[in-house]
Image 1 (cartoon, rainbow, N blue to C red):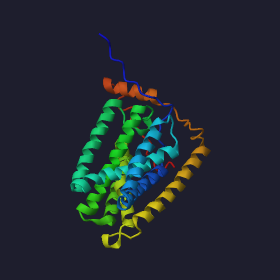
Image 2: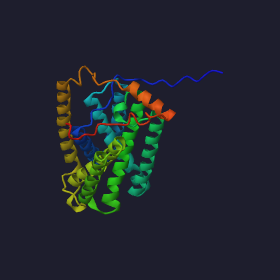
Image 3: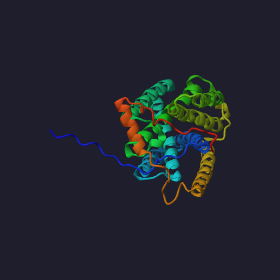
Image 4: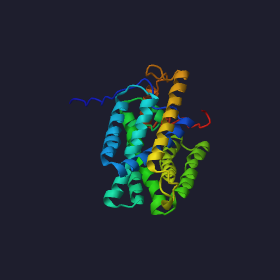
Length: 295
């Protein structure tokens, strides 16, 4: 009887994600706002542009990222930006096309996100973003990122529209909620779960801020328009991304497309094997650096 050959996947010399410091959260929050207003702007002015930029740009950026063998800040954050735009579209789609309440969409995306995280953990034995050293783990990662954008978009619309709290109170609510995982982590809660909770909450927070700036006074906003907010967000995004590229080059992290971070794939494999065997290393590779004061 012939044994089934193990499924092969590409391996990388280092994780294909950035370090999680303050600048990570600032840019992530900014991309959520840009994704919200850019999607609304294109949906209002040109469905063709929405299709080309939102859908085409998403797949082009994702393929660009997945085909690379190393982390680079421009490639990584451009992909996040297009995931933000596309994630807004897939979250708004069921509501616009089927008329489903946003809280129903939120529940659906929450189930999908939980299912994907469970699949990822059962397959790899870790959800640590700094274990993204294989092609399979990277695909799990970007699928999870997309689900967090869909969930976050629906949650933000739930509080602002279904619960009629408006954008101001939505910012207050999600601004308070996003601190909870940080406090939990400081008190000893699982770092990976705290990371993904915070990551998911950046979406409704950033989108609520952007909508509050963009929508008209009659709808509870400042009336800057979606086009203006998107343009300003893109300028700020480019400036912050330029800062990251320069500082990482000066630090030696980005050099000719290579990232000199220790190879953790062997340790991750050992942890995953220990997990399947029920040994003491079950949670050996679940840590993630969330120290926001380490910038």
